[in-house]
Length: 448
Image (cartoon, rainbow, N blue to C red; front, side, top):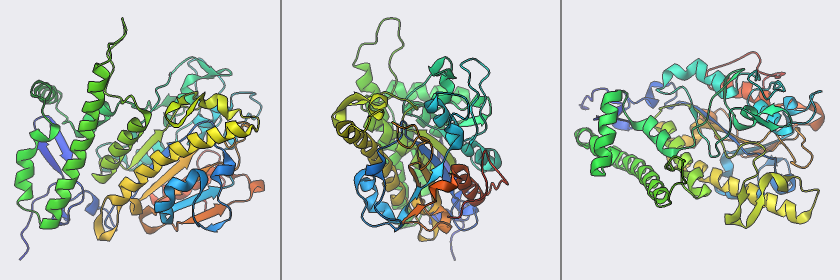
């Protein structure tokens, strides 16, 4: 007779709550197993600014994906999960009578499908974003309705693009038409939010003890973990050990970044640096690790992660691109500038492919992996940065959505149809259990 195991969804300790991943031994109680089909579906949106080099991006033919080249080459190991979607449009990123300001409109309309009010004052207005539509519908099923991550901090006020508020070009997620969801760029803050307890007094006490004795967050749950481990089968014991190891690795990366930052004397009248890594690749991958952990433990099912703000002029010296990204995007068809744009695009894709690979390695119920149960939208509301066009966008849909999406294809929608990207969101809403009759400028549910 199988031993009955009491409900267990987290490891508990002083000021610490570490949610558990799916474990077969706890299938009757694990968060994922409570969902029909064995595992919940998750949804995440990734944004890259300034458009892309479309020549290096676009596969040679529609239909089944062959060998991926150019910008998409880093996804070759996972191409059976990838849909390249050509011909989608973000009409509300166009001027539509409002004049210049394509970058601000691109970022703010990508997930809202709404035209941003042209203002750099307090009267900003655009619309609720797709991630928040899902979060407000199913957010009560998880500890966090959504997770807003970021790499590049941005201003919430001021004039950043031809009379448009900086809030438009700095925020991907919008809780309401005038309320952006500020992204968290500090991995330490994200880690603490995910894994610290909820009692403020106990939380502060635990943090003080950890810092005093240089302890890991795991030290506070080890007694609980040992008790649980004794009730698990060999396979689940290994899975739990791997999961706790991954939590510890993320914690160590954060501590390493914090120590490196402390070694640099802060400027006068400036706060000391936080735990943000000084190397942008490390920063991006750390945020990817945190998103994977949050999805793996069902702490949230909705997330956003822009790799930079729209119009960002960040240089990428580590890949021999010392020029600013935005400056290069106005390439004027100069071959050398286009080559550098393609390098930046591929660098971003490599970080995304890292996250995709991490999700593929996470095992879930019924022999599936996390990548089988997610839907990841990656792209931009700018096509070619030089033309500032907002049709034929560079869009990827990665993941099988719990078996509801046929992947491994290059899908081309007719350019003349001006198919709104919000039609894609309607299709994803249905799969997430948050259907809507319309959203933004949608015209119908996209068949995928």
